[in-house]
Image 1 (cartoon, rainbow, N blue to C red):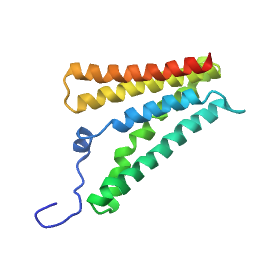
Image 2 (image 1 turned 180 degrees about the vertical axis):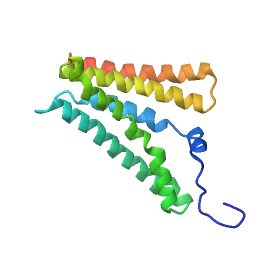
Image 3 (image 1 turned 45 degrees about the horizontal axis):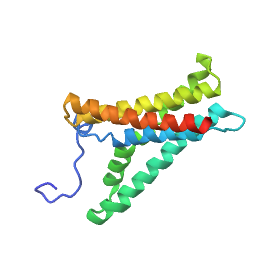
Length: 173
């Protein structure tokens, strides 16, 4: 709140917003994408297209759910809700959707790599786990963590990703 009594939140410059960005949604969205790939064992007539849509639409559905939870949870009770608050929350939660894009693109390019549908699933899973590790390392680094903590954050997310991969192996054998 400014000294003039204006309660409209000020819009921060792009560089300042980027330095304060929360990458939790990206980590979460990557893990969600990996889980979608694991759960997408039996798809219909157009498995690649269906998997791409499933990844993107699931990311969007979870983004909406997170926006809703933030707006009608803590924010509504502690603060009023105005257009700027809604836009801020939508922007902050957008990494959930962004994290679904690389695995979906991996599925899209998989025929160019000569991969069958199972190969496309494995490629998308690997890309999702790599994204999860990347988002967590970026989050730790942007938060000012020392390189040792960045490695810990990345390692924990790699272990979580490998756990999801082990679920896929277990479910397909």
